[in-house]
Length: 530
Image (tube, rainbow, N blue to C red; front, side, top):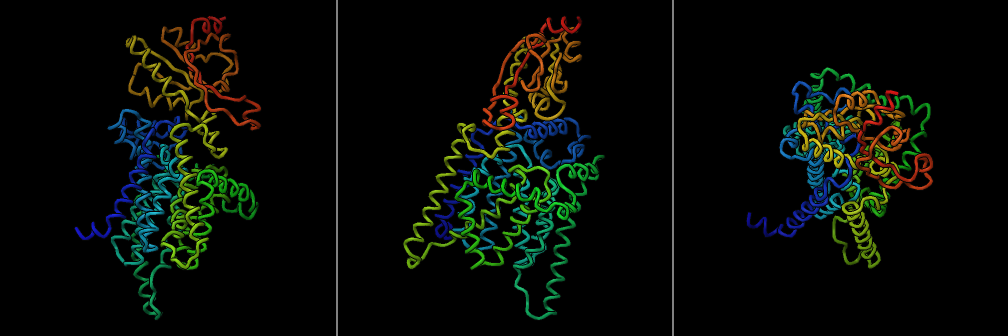
């Protein structure tokens, strides 16, 4: 052990620094970004499942796999802030992915330098930092994917049953997390290319038989874990809801380039802005050297990265950056191959300077964007779909926690008085966003009242008549009448990020969305009665 520390001291310290820095980037100001629509839904499901064990398969009602919500439940017991509790699950999954990237890089290239560099890229890339700080399932999917491949590679190289079984557990975890986990199941047999096959056909057949046996364990374990969902009453909803997000297989025969081409352009934009940009150049260099020196390993990584990207681009009905997030580890490992060794002296001064320049440029770009993500996220140049969804529109939860705190303060003043809060919509950012913060107070009722309101909803009018303290939480674009004329008193207003000029939302809805917390006062009821 003493010799191990002596021989590996520098590398161990670098690895600990990378892991610690990655943890800092993911956990520091973890709740700085406002809650997103899907986060609110997932957290609310977790709370309901925690309170009622009979509803442990509740996510299946919307065709979503339940593993992320199951893992979130114990964190809700330990951490008071539900958003922090759920996001820490993704942050920890991100750190697990980082360790998996290190292991996979070393298994494939036998280079600790490449493994450390791949981990460092993942640690500071704004792409990974951004999504590892959100209570979405994508970080967990990425975690299970990379570890599935790690143990599959060990299975093939070492011919070990225990590794095959562990690969099955991780594959099952991926499928229990999100439907794209099926990509890992499809791509898993490609690891057989890494095995040193004997030359004689009989020996090849015997080896193949062994691997059929080993991978049978992998797939059986994964299938058994997937089948756990059959215990829920809505297992069939997964297939039904998947059809809302993907085209049928025949789509490639009907319209092969649409949406393939525009979505590939979007994907390039995600890597250009969040990679950040220089990572694309480093990736191309890594592909060149990888195919030249480690062809089988490079092709395996390219298959695990590029095949899902192409399928998602061809068959997805919509596209956002998180849909391709699970492909990042394999792209980063390819990038790191360029830096697996120190360049020999004869490599030339130009090559030495070029590699140093790429590293410095990447680190500078990445850390600058990371700094903005932690201090002033509205200044970050995000892809259009991400900025709109997470910062500008109704899906961005600016002011939700603050509104919940004000309502809670009102309850504390008079605990015997019932409070009713109406929200726009029935599902999603509101009312789920408010419920996650107020679910512990039975005297506060949060109800959805619909969209595009032109009058005070009957449920809120009757609540006010009954003597309850009554509120309405709504985005200004969803209120289609003058609030004063309806008798709504502004308690608080929370403006969201400015929209980009020239966009459809800017032209139709104005430069900025605002979330309002209104109190329903007597005048609104009187006007409705008239």
